[in-house]
Amino acid sequence: MSKKLVIFLVIFTLVFSVGCQNQNVTNKQISDSSNEIKYEVQNDGGAFSSKDIIYFIMTDRFYDKDKENNDFPDVNKDDPKAYHGGDLKGIIEKLDYIKSLGVTAIWITPVCKNQYGGYHGYWITDFYKVDPHLGTLSDLKELVQEAHKRNIKVILDYVVNHTGNKSPWLNDEKYKDWFHPKKNISNWNDQKQLEEGWIFGLPDLNQDNPEVKKYFIDNAIWWIEQTGIDGMRLDTVKHVPKDFWNEFAYNIKSKYPNFFLLGEVWNDNPRYLEQYHKVGIDSLTNYPLYNGLRKTFTKFGKANSLVNAIKMQSAFTNPELNGIFVDNHDNKRLITEAKEYGEAYLKQSLTFIMTYPGIPIIYYGTEIAMEGGDDPDNRRDMEWDKISNSEMLNYFKMLTHIRNSNEALYNGEFELLNYDSYFLSYMRKKGDSKFIVIYNLQNKEKNITINLKDDSSKYTDVLSSKTYNIENGNLNITMKPLEVIILTSN
Image (cartoon, rainbow, N blue to C red; front, side, top):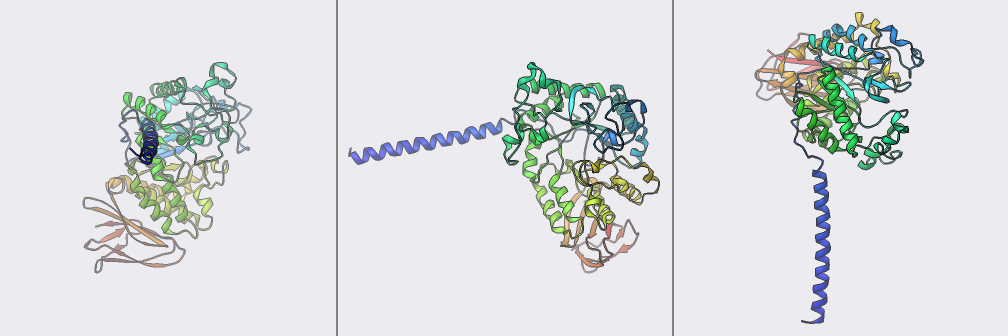
């Protein structure tokens, strides 16, 4: 054998060996990724479905029924960052109002004992106690029982990512391995930093520690067994490893197959969100759709943003189970952000989430057009004086009635129809029942044409009772400024 051939074979062997090693690394990475899904979980919504409508309540800001639990130094209704006195008994008191809205479930902010100033519930110091500002465990049990009497399900906000920075665990040697080292997140695209960094300076729990994992699975099951709640809204999901959520979901669903898990994943990419559905979470807060909605239903907004978000929904396995929303406690209220013509855009956005596939989530006060800027201004006390004379409330109740009365709107096929930058239309269909929803996004009259091909139906606007005929396969309508039309087939 020639010397050159020997050298060639040695080099070839080394290259091939390195290639195999790289391939093994890739396989290991894939294997590690697949280890995120250790358990198969039946995550089809449990007792929840696209027929549901969720009403989201920040307990401290809703209604103050029990004045006896206001005698704390951090209760001050004039301070937007202090407790204001709302409590669990206050929600019980207002259950008939909530029922009148046409909703089927309530989601309440965390009830666990919080440190000084933790009115919102996310600065927990004791995961086994109800915060005395809000009431007692007995009050929570009564709330669930009274809600169930009215066929209203209850979702409890649940936190596993962090504790309050005054947690007694921080000064206890026993818990020193329960937290990640203090480090802020500098790169929000780095998943490792997301899962191990301290958000807003809050001590980040280490769910890779078996003791931490067991504690929170046991704790979640304890709350379910103690109270009879129907679901949990899982806070800051993307900041917790997926293998934890897989085991968490598996343990809960194994005991309570009808239990509902709603995960908050604040990200614009549906494929990123879908990863958390795959590990076992039933429903995800649909931020991609929310962002499209907020960029469309506003002054100078264009339909393209929402159309693009709609087209991205195909990345979801069960998009109809995801939570779709207009407002929440982390963002300015839409009516405030939209400014001019805010009420018209709020009506349009409420119409959208009530007629698009998904589970609508209504933030308390949105139904009466409450305003609110950046946190904490978006967490104002519920304005009960407005409910007796609110045009928005009447419109909202009409929407929920139409939705609850027509399966096509909560369980029908969805078809995007004609649109341009300044109008949008789509159809919901179930059997012979059809609805066409149309939006004029501009504050001026607009002539629109919707092509319906072989459709020979007559359509009536449920809002105005005006009837429209199909002419040569087209529906021609002159829309008023910022008008929304909901047509149903006769």
